Every structure is written in C-alpha cells, then in structure tokens.
Length: 475
Image 1 (tube, rainbow, N blue to C red):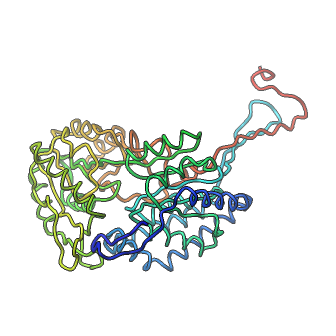
Image 2: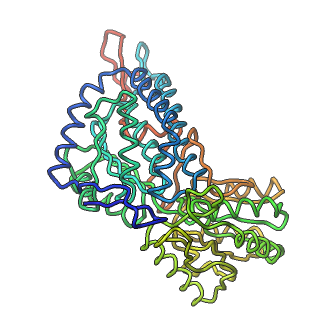
Image 3: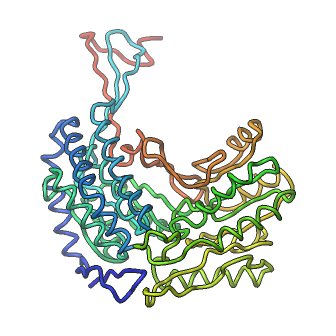
C-alpha cells in the first residue's frame, strides 16, 4: 500500500492506494491501447472539444482541487489555486490547438508534385509525474497526449496519488472515454514496468536527473521509444550593480521561498555584484525572517512545509555542508515547529552568505527554501557562474541596462531566461524546458508540447501521371 499523508500533519492520512504490480500495469496498458484505437479515429477538433470540457470541469472544481493540493503536498492556498489554474489554462490552450496546423506544406523540386507533413499518434504513452505540481504537470502531459490521439497510462508520484486520481476523475467527467486514461500507483518498480512495456511507445518523465537517466535507460532496453525528460534545475538570479533593488527583493523572496523552494524553477542561487551585495543581503534577511511559516490552510501563511521528513533531512544536510565549506547562515538554517501541526516538516526560509560557486550548495539541487548568495565582480563573472553548473532550466537577470540584459539572454545557457523577473512563473503558451542535464531536447507546453506525443509523417503526392525521380530528372 501507498499511504499519502498531509506534510503539515503527517498523522493525517489523505488516502491509501494499492501499489500497481506487473499484472496491474499489463491491464492498464491493455485498456489504454484498446481505447486508443477508437480515439485515434476521432478528428482532432472533436478531441479538442473534450479537452475544453475537462477545463470547464476543473474550473467548477477549482476550490476542491486546490484544497486537496494544499492537504496532500503542503502548498499554501494561493499557490495551490495557481497549480489548478495552470491546468485549466492548459486545457484551454490545447483545446485551441485542435484546429491549428499539425504540419507544413513544402514546395517540391519537381512539377505536379505536393509535399507536406502531418503528425500521427504513437499509440500508448507513459506519463510519470512529480508531486510538486500534482495537477498542473499532469495537464502539461495528458492534454497534448490526448489531442495527439494517444492512450495514456499515468504514474504519479507516490507522494501525491490523491491529486492524480482527482485529476483523472475530472478528465473522465469532461468526456474522456473511461479506459483511455489509466492510473497506476507505485514506486520505481511500477515505473520500470511501465517504461519497458512493449506496447508503450513514448515516455514522458519529470523528476530528478538521476531518476531520469534510469527512465531513459529502461525505455531504451526494449525501445526505440520517444523519451522526453524534464529534469533538475539550479536556477540563478543575477543582480547587476544598476538593478532596482526593491524589485530584486520581491523577486528573490518569491523565487526562493515560494512553494517552500520546491519548484523545479525555484531561485536557488543569487549571483550579486559586490557593490550592492551587503545592502541587498541585509534587506533580504529582514524580509525572509518576517515570512510566516505555518499551516498551509491558514490564509496568513507565507511558507508551508516541505514534502516529508526525508526532504527535511536532506535540506538540513545541505546547510550543514555549506557551513562546513565556509558559508554563513544569514537567517534560518533550521527546522521549525508549528503550533497545531504536530510532526509537520517545516524548514525556515534560509539565506546563506559567503557561498562560492564551487560549493556543493551552489551546484546541486536542494529543493527547499534555501537561497545561496554568491558575490561577483561584474557582468562577465556573473555569467560564468550562472553557466558553471551542469543543469540549465531557468535563470534571471536584473538590470536597468538593456544592452546587458540582451547580452545575458544570448550568453546564459538555460532553456528559460527572465529579465527583471524571478526564475519562476512559466506561462503555458510558451515552451518549457532546459539545456544540458535538465532535459533531452523536447519542450513541454506551447505549440511544441504535442511533439513528444506524436510522430511526424512526410507525405508526397505526385499528380504528374509519370515517373519523376528527385535529384535525377530535375538536373
């Protein structure tokens, strides 16, 4: 059994779920494959109408879904609502894509000949999603996969099974055929059985770099398959000497401590020009120390719990390692207790000063409310530090100089770059993904979101009535 608990009060059980063994995975894949054969014959605009209705169902259930997100993964109310709203927005966007082009028409080099491309479903796709956006991230994968004409087997994180079930219930209420979207619950063995199943033709995974590598290797053993990986981040905010420090302050607080630092795009490194570092650190410490840590169901709470005791222990370990390497805890740096939340896994918003780019805390993803401040001398060193890690999801630069901003956009090696905004806040109509070890080239969301769930087909139509040989008869 998988037992889902409230991270603010771990004694409070959200639900219990059977672990899906090999036989359960077999049944889920078979059901999805059977339903997919009919779904693939439904015209894309009609598929899109179903996705649009799912969005309306989720809009009607927004408060209920948001409360479940808060209870199961610890997001404060406003952020839980944003999680659900992202799924609603994604449904609307993908529904609109149902009448957009799935391909291109190309001129041919021979007369009386037409060349064009289209996209076709791959069949059954496996979607493996994390706990930190338990409604939004499934929507990023499920809706494009449905529009492309696929059957789906979703394996959510074992830390957020209730949210996944509620999401799929909304899909079915919107009109998705009952067998088309399947859910399997479990740990690594369940995911491995799904990724290696011979009927599964595409795998989309969001999670850690280490697990992503295992997913890719497992999928390749019985492949080939389309494999989309959205992995780790070590996101940096660059602050130049001419930046608006009031704007920086707001962005850094939300970027680092929003969702208790548990977004893949959370601001983990603050790379700041020495000329303004002391002033900025002082202001950040004052504001971070004033953030309200508490029950995420309480409207006055700014920072809720981290997901579980293992996460709490890992975050503590990173802070201890940073101090051992010479960093200083400017504020926070410890677990805290909250009245009425017995056993809750809360960690104080933490700012580490004196961090160097070589420190472990500056290179590895922490996934907690910890901001490492790295002081630099000017633009060139800042860009060098941003690019010194082996992941590249998101980065930001704060400056009043448009030339510096645009140079940074060119030089920063990440999939997403913000100017005068923190490293979080992706919009669903733009592609989302990263460089280096963050991903393998696919992008989620936007018009390109459908690419990981479909295969391109090139079509030639020769209406000349005679044999025409490209590269021969035209020369």
